[in-house]
Length: 76
Image (cartoon, rainbow, N blue to C red):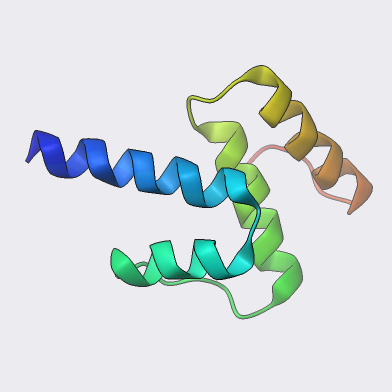
């Protein structure tokens, strides 16, 4: 189970940080995770997810900026 979770996190981080919708959707499909159909909400959830994972601060800064520019806060 530990190997599964390690791979899950690796796949998650790779998909989210790519900021490539097709890659993110493939990751979501692989792990049977639903996603919002609305494009704005989809990207908002991507950027909020990036803020919530263990990645470098510069990646989080980019996501915070995107959220502010689109009228969102970084909170849940």
